[in-house]
Picture 1 (cartoon, rainbow, N blue to C red):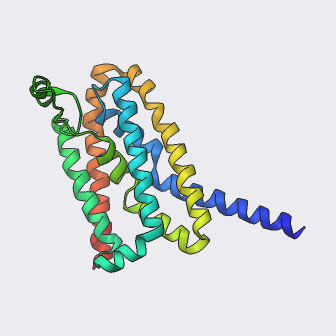
Picture 2: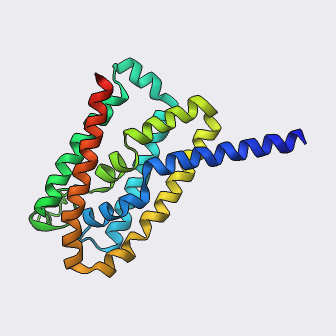
Picture 3: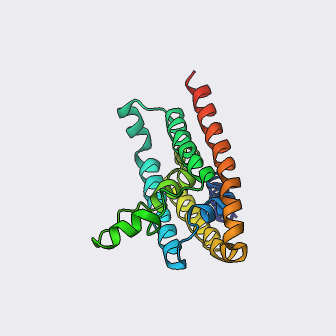
Length: 214
């Protein structure tokens, strides 16, 4: 009976930790952002960028789960500062989306054409930034893993990170199907709408960070 109760309690902790991190990462809410930022990419390119996002997000969350408190203490940085920095980055990205520009895309536009002759790709992908950081592994997710490890321990936070990342990978992987259904015109409209949404998220990040600092 005692063993059964312990297993039940552990199962509840694992599920709770997974739900907390998955909700904070908000993968379903990031689907339109992923579609907008990868607009014009081939299916293989979108898969590649998603893979980069997952790898970067996993590495960052593991780093802060295990060494986060030490890193912040040594550098004298608060999580509120992370929120402000992430918000500013998202705000800059939202401006590009609203103007229809895609500085974060690879293999497209003048940059790709100019580098074709030299055999060098000068484009910057969207996988690491902003998909991996700060959309998946943003200030909220970093805070969540640090709270989880403090409350439930290393084993639970590791389970939460890997399970939430896998779930996010599966969810965002379906965005390719949605992209094909929307077409070029739909993706152009979505890009502008998402620009406004990203700007709102950025302002929320910045505002919350400023309130936390003062």
